[in-house]
Amino acid sequence: MTRAVLPLVLCLALAAASCGSDPVIHDWQRPHDTYQVGAFTKSENAEELKAELEKNGFASRVETEIRGGVFYLNVLVDVYSPVPGVEAKLERISKAKPILRSKARVDAPAQNSGS
Image 1 (cartoon, rainbow, N blue to C red):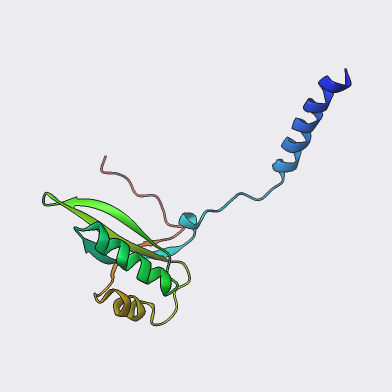
Image 2: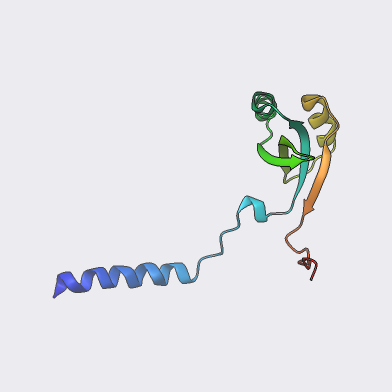
């Protein structure tokens, strides 16, 4: 009987422990600005810029896009704590003017999708 009750007690203890915990907030849910710092047709170029950005302290990602029938690899940087000069630093690293793609805000109202 004790062996049958032990798993049930453990499950109840775990469930009770998680009830009062704070919700997990992921990076993409935090307020941030997204800059596009490059658009390439060759993956080697996108990966080279991504590595250079990471070497300079910027977490970056590559997003694909098809525009006018051409496949692009866009290099994006999410900036969570903007500091003066961040755009200039991104421009110096990427050798191109960064494009502000979006300002994601947690409290921003949801937009209707063209109904």
